Structure formats: C-alpha cells, structure tokens
Image (tube, rainbow, N blue to C red; front, top):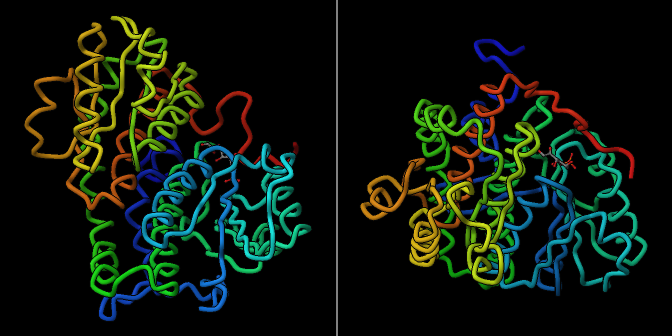
Length: 366
Ligand code: F6R
C-alpha cells in the first residue's frame, strides 16, 4: 500500500534508502574489502577468459547499463558494449564462447530482452542477468544472475529498479577487476569502502525534496527541456529525460553535453530550458563551459550540483543540490532529484503518475 504517499512512484523513490541498504547486505564484506555475488557463478577461470561484454536491455535498464559500461571498462578493463535489446537481437552481433551477454531487466519478462538472451545463447555466449523479479524468465535462462534487491515496483516509471542495478554493476566491476588482477588491492578496498556511504547519500538527496518541489512548481508548464550530462553522468541525462517524458508528457531530450556544438545548440533560446548534471566529477569543468554556452544563448539552466559548489549558483537559475559522492557512485545520487522533479511535475499537472497513458509495466510483446 501507498501509506503516507500519494502515489507508488513517490513511495518507491523514498524506498531507495532501504533498497540500496538491502543491495549491499550479504554482498559486501567491509572488513575484508571484498564482494560476493555467488549466484553469478563467476569462476576465476571465466573472469580471466572474458574478451568482451555486451550489456543488453531496454529503457531505464539500458541507462543503468550505460553507467555499467564505464564502471566495468574502468575497473576491470574489459571492453563493454551497451545495446538496446530490440536492436541487438536483429543485428547479428559478434559473439563467441569468450563473450558474456549481460541482460538487465526489472521484470525479467521484457520480450526484446529475452529474445536478445535467446539469440546470445544460440551463439554460445555466457549469459548473465541482473533481474528484480524473482523466478522470472530472464533469471531462469541465465547461467548466472544478480538478484536486484529493489523489492516489488508498482509505479510504471522505474526508480528503485534503476539505482539497484547501478550498485550491482559497481560491485560486479570490482569483482571482475579483482579476479582478473586489474584492480590493485588498495584501490579495491577503497572502492568497497565507498559503498558504505550510499544509503546516507541517498537519504540526504531525499531530504531536499521540498526544494525540488519548488522548482517543479515554477516549471510545470514548460513544453520542452534539454538534459545534458557527460561521462558517467551522461546516462543520467537520458534517464532524467525519460522519467519526465513518460509521466508528465513533456518533450525532454537528452544529449551528451559535448555533442551540443554539433547541432542541438541551435535549439537553445529563452523557451528551451536546460537541465545540466554537473556534480564534482572528472567531467565537471567540461560541464561548466557547456552551461556558460547555454546561458550565453538566453536559456534558463537548472543544474544538479555538489553541495558547496561556489561557481554554479552564479551561473544557473535553479540548483538541485546533491551531497558530495565518489564519482563512480555519483549517478546513484544525481538521479534522485531528477526522479523527484519528474514525479512532482506530473503530480502538479494532475496526471496519473502510476499509470501513464500508453505504457505498461512490463512489455511482453515485441
Ligand atoms: C521506464 C521504464 C521502462 C523499462 C523498460 C524495461 O521508467 O520503466 O523504460 O525500464 O520497459 O523494462 P524491464 O526492466 O522490466 O526489462
């Protein structure tokens, strides 16, 4: 039941402190600085043999996969491609016995994702899945899986089943890096120790909900908006834009910020607000210059910024503050105000947040 909340989506956004605590439980040994993912059936021999990983998924799950690509490449030095399942299944991808195909799915029943898994199986890949629904088809057909600890998700717009796989992928990258010897022990211990911060960081984002509501109130009648991000937060631009369009029916478009100059900057004027994801991560300076360019063209800018940032307030019209987080975990934090923003705009518009038009929770047809 919804309890004190008006909609399941809002309840599920707030459940993320718990779901992320559960995600760590039993998997992280903080004393040893190690990760355990027994259901993945990942042997040291397999870890060393992997030549390539394809992550395949749809929608929000694919956005989690885009973050996972950066984490696995950075930490385990394995090439990763992210493929939208409906494309992957018909592309005749190059797969052999040293390829891992990793499907990500909340429902574990998405037709395109399951078809991509079947196709990969036929070609001889090792099949992994990160799945929320226990006993679902994706979980059953995989050689190994990570069970997301999101708990049942009822709102059609996925929220807690986005942040759970982000942390699952971070843990997977550490485990792979450790087994392949690409991750030095001191570095591994530091990355594992950072996991302990997550529930509190997310809780501090949620504490700022009232500030997000204020901006949502002011912006609820916009017709268009551009979401920009770079590096590990580029997928968060896509995810933030998807959340807004699916429940508020506002046209939101996402771009890797560096692509602006190759065309989309022509869109920016006073009627095209920009939402820039600009925490203190390694791409911060690049985001600042992007924001300056948007401002110079009259656009109003909302930034997701790290608490204590002294440059963005002077540049931006609104700020969604997030606590300082280790950069590899920052997407878990930066997405929270964007979930809240989409939720409150839709709620203020009086829309059916949990059952948006034309959408189903699980897409079991092609
Ligand atoms: C967006 C959303 C969809 C799903 C997509 C994949 O909020 O819910 O984009 O993420 O349909 O669904 P699963 O994860 O069940 O495979």
